[in-house]
Image 1 (cartoon, rainbow, N blue to C red):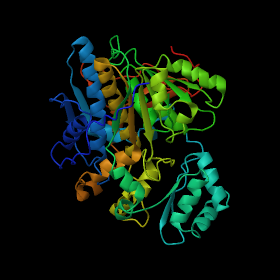
Image 2: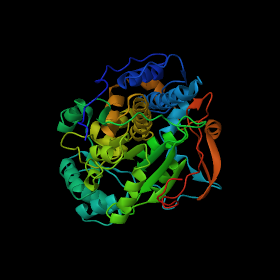
Image 3: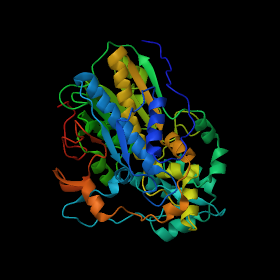
Length: 483
């Protein structure tokens, strides 16, 4: 086995200052951190923050990650074909992409079953706030067991109101639920997990093995012929693989029968993919996955650190099983620190790290508030797609297997350290894009679910337009084979 060498490409850099084209500045920073040449004018950003009512430049940061992924696809295609092309990224479309699952709907539109979940911020007995993650039914069930209540909202409010926020956070997490005591930026900065994250770069790309050089892609699409195993759930990891699919990659999503996913998020992140279900605790299913791995270029997983490794699928083992593999790991709180193995989601990280507290103050309400979207999830996904393509370029030039690491908390730290946009201008922004503009950004497609209307890819490539060859499909729609 080849000795693992840590090849972190760049340390944390100073955040770009506000300017007339901050998305372009952020793109250059991401390229620099990944050891890539500058954009050289090939990426055009149209618009600027604030797009939505938030002082956080979430559209600009998201656009930079979207632009980086698209630019890298164009460069890989140029290496193979000689075709030079430009990329255009509208900022309003990028803002919509940070909340894409909310727009997807059936055609004709039907009422959503069950309605929206209740507000997830609750007052605790010590006068603080607790964020309770409620979208996953099994997490809510475990939290209710800790509270000793049923699903009646008044009971939940009373039970949480009798407990301290930090104590309840730990109890729910220990029981397999998901919650976070709401902290402000100063309290989070003093937390040991924040200190651990502060010591990490935004991402890492590490060479973990040797192999012969392998060309990237074939055919007319930038990533045509590339095979991606997508063992991820919810938003960040699935978005990474969906972004590779929009450039022509053959993506096979591997769902689990043990961990339910959120229906609309499965639909939103399933564009361009085939999809199957394997239970890795079943010996036959695990062997089926190993067989798929032999033909894969990318292995993406978004479970808690150590979970996939327990099945003999740690990055170093992947490199032995499939020399030349590009392994991607996305977690909630990173690979180091006391919370390294903790489950978490975009909204949970926002609550714990001070973002929700600042948003509540900005909106002038009593309660903390989440950002108007899931920018930590979606931006991490686009950023991961960019990094996968960086590693593929290195594999093509010098060979090798590579491991990529990033987390929602590291992405959130980057966003939080960016200068805020003008608060007065942000406060005047409407909570949604104009209906006519949303209509321009969306498309309708027949799928195994029936007709669905959803957002189109954001990045516009001049020579190889981004699109998904396959419609989104249910998790168990396909067999565990390459097409």
